[in-house]
Length: 400
Image (spheres, helix red, strand yellow):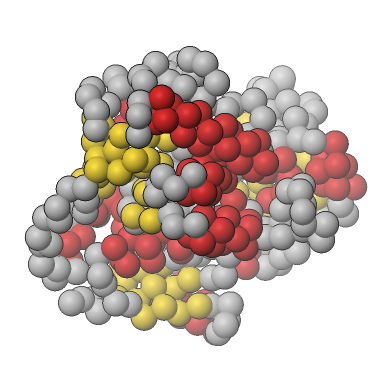
């Protein structure tokens, strides 16, 4: 097998994603946690020629990049060759009562309820196992945690509870489904599953701006996770773009590290909740650029140096000094594999027929994959409960 080194940090969902993918390949690796050894941060930046996000991954001394780069290599069919990995023999295909696609609050709540109903659910975790909460520092509004809890800790509790009642977890992303006949088919890179019923809880992923320089400097000053990468921008000018709760949470977290945090928002008022907005507005290290959008990320070839920011009312464009640029503009549903399979809105969110039911009997939907209104952990869990109960009753009606 190949010699693999991965630099990580605590509470980094992208690090978890990369390690899970390597685990599914049976690959062993040296993990260097820079929270435990901060001196290794400089080593990581030097080895990766300026990489300031985690994870940074090296295979046989070659810099691969971050978790998205690792996933891209796998989907292109190149990762197995780099890992010097022999192809696995196909496993026998089994039919399960319920397969759940996704392991965020909706998926794991569905698993808990269907497991307690003795349906022996199988959860296709996805490489983003745990969902968006894996990149959340403090969860203060989930009932039962008066002192708050970190997102990764909360999702670990969800998973342990589902496992306690017999839920089985399959690593990796679902890459294809066939809902044309029962038992339904679900495929990952490694496995084929069959199911009498399916709960789709594949969640959502962060949106990108799609501007010049964003992709070029991703990992070199452009980030989508303050928890993962704020550490690298101590005493620097940091910019956050967005106006919702996620953007305010990112800004407040980054204020611990940065010399100054500037929030850029395209409107003249925030859409964040009042408590989050007030915290950011009152913070002495956070300032706001209203009615503005970022048009370009500018760097020196190795790292971000500034942003071109346009005032949408006056048309004026200014250069804003920036060492770290964090994008927090919302999310897009993870529904790519359901195109032409399940009906969806123009924005990609799945449509519901009745309750949690889709237009296909035996296929149920839960969480942020359809909810573009509330998008909270607690509502996702509620939707997961609803889907599980609907699924259980439907299977019973089918004599199972």
